[in-house]
Amino acid sequence: MAGTLYVVPTPIGNMGDVSKRVEEVLRSVDFVVCEDTRIGGKFLFLLDIKKELISHHEHNKRQSAKYITNRLLMGESCALISDAGTPAVSDPGEEAVRCCLDAGVTVVPLAGPCAAVCALSASGLPSRRFVFEGFLPDKGKERAERLSALAKEQRTAIVYCTPHDIAKDAAALYEALGNRRVTVCRELTKLNEQICATKLRNLSGQLADGIIPAKGEFALVIEGADKEVLNMDAFWADMDVETHVEHYISLGFSKMDAIKKTAKDRGVPKGEIYEICK
Image (cartoon, rainbow, N blue to C red; front, side):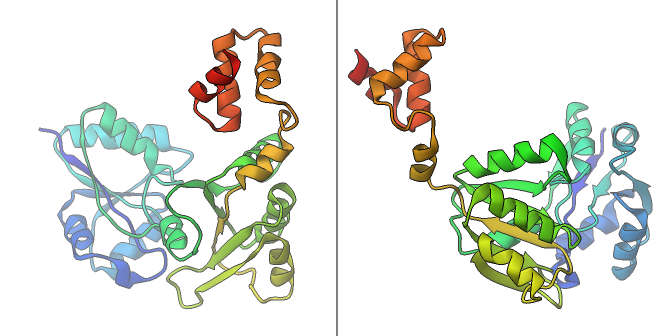
């Protein structure tokens, strides 16, 4: 009978966040899978737990995922941990989870720390709908495309930044998104934790002045785009509904498809557009 893959969150800065269930699972499994065995080993040492450690990182994730899955299919059980926070969220652990699920291995997630959700809960920004962006690409076309997508994103966005990139990312986000509200969460749950509500225009100056030190890990929670502002900049902003539909028909779309695309652009039910154009 196949074993179980436990997805086990680790503290993002405070060992007090280790739950009793996390300890019980770590003591019960046959081995532990982690991104960096040095960090994983230190975490287990602090809990006085000794287990076999298997490395699973960005450069070996496909091979190690197969190895882990095969061991679980033979009846062993393991805990998947991350360097900090919830595994498989902006983390190579997702490959191991997918491989296990595809093979029919039982996957059991444990509740626990996650920097993105922790930051969102303290942001004061709308949390009913949000998008997790993780780290921005360093440069090039992919970075430009991601910033362009964020500029149009109406949901609250969560972006991770390293201390080396925070100044560059803050400037790029202001240039792409404009002067939106942002809650800066630095060193969450750690001794030097700092949470600051500000505006993107001010963030670069606060970093330069040391009001927000460029030290530690950052989670930026950014206000979503205003729908009315987006619509003002849209290509169809000066078109009436009929002209908008005719634009798509001129591009080769059927009338119904043109109505659907017009409705999507304007964020209204397609029936509303249909009534105007019938």
